Amino acid sequence: MSWRDDPITEKQEAMIAQIEEDALMNDAWIPPFTGTTKGEAYDYIGNFIGVVHRTFYNPHEDAGDRV
Image (cartoon, rainbow, N blue to C red):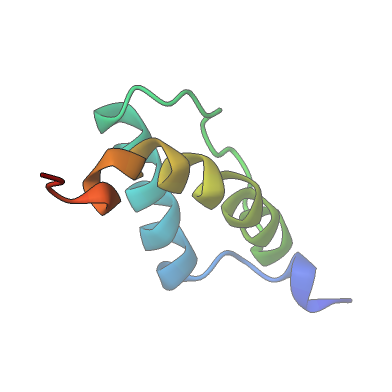
């Protein structure tokens, strides 16, 4: 048996909840998490944290005021 088969952790649950909430706030569609293991949570977080991050990023915020 591998660590991937262990039950999801509280930290993973919290991270997934945050990712899903951030996606809703930013109109980024991601599928709901339906897994129950550490491995499934690890894969979900890895696949979708970047999607949410990119919807938050606005390159114009980095440009500053240019006169």
